[in-house]
Amino acid sequence: MIELQNVSFSYGEKPVLRDVSFKLEQDESVVIMGPSGSGKSTILRLILGLQCPQYGQVIIDGRNICAMRERDKQEIRKSIGMVFQDGALFDSMTVGENVGYYLIEHTDRTWEEIEGSVRQMLGFVGLDADDIIDKLPEQLSGGMQRRVAIGRALLSTDPKIMLYDEPTTGLDPQSTENVLELINKLTHERSISTIVVTHQIADAFNIADRFIVIHAGEKVFDGNLKELRDSTDERVAGFLAPFRNSFTGVAERDFLNTRH
Ligand SMILES: Nc1ncnc2c1ncn2[C@@H]1O[C@H](COP(=O)(O)OP(=O)(O)O)[C@@H](O)[C@H]1O
Ligand SMILES: [Mg+2]
Image (cartoon, rainbow, N blue to C red):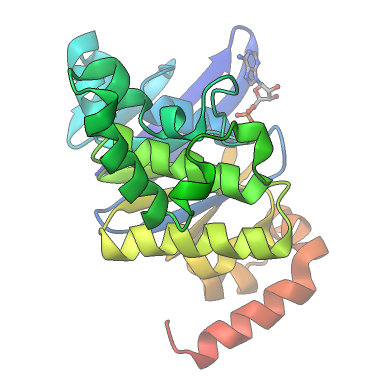
């Protein structure tokens, strides 16, 4: 469904990704982890075709996205829901206008017609539409803003793929759990393929089948939770070290639940 083949990418003279390859099959969920600045957000931009690699290819549904005409790229992007870092809501628009943004801009439907879909979506992402639909994003907590952003992505596209950039950064533990639950619900109930990018790895263990670690632009790990825990690669171990405690706890709980 998504494949990076030997992708190298630089911003001007600055190399960011080097020879990165991986595949995401349908219905699979992958977490891409790595320190800040390692190139994670760039990978998402490449998948959306917002940037093109200098070497290698990004294949979406069997086609090289960078070889497509703009109109076909747009078509592909309709099947990909993107939740940008920090939610990135339009702060001068109400919550309702944010969630309905695509329908307002790209269809002939009136607000009266759109409002029903918006309310339904707010309910789906676990929010009280009556309470928040007319509020501005700044009046909501960080966790609620992330859920609004996810709702907007779902109503803007009919996603077969969801990409989340640091969906839990800056959230308190309860909000983090709510957002992760929502991501899981989408992945499993709607069978959406999922990529979550995060530098907060403790949050990532319960939401993925597979883990990729990026270090300074290179893929240094690709495997399941057990393999991750057992990895002897210095760069992987170094990245995991600060999280070892929570990591071990979650990993063991996970094995008791025999998911693997
Ligand atoms: N638009 C840009 N122009 C130049 N350099 C950039 C741009 N965006 C990101 N970078 C640089 O590319 C590297 C990787 O960035 P990014 O993919 O955002 O990393 P991450 O998401 O892992 O924190 C960083 O060193 C960053 O400073
Ligand atoms: Mg980033």
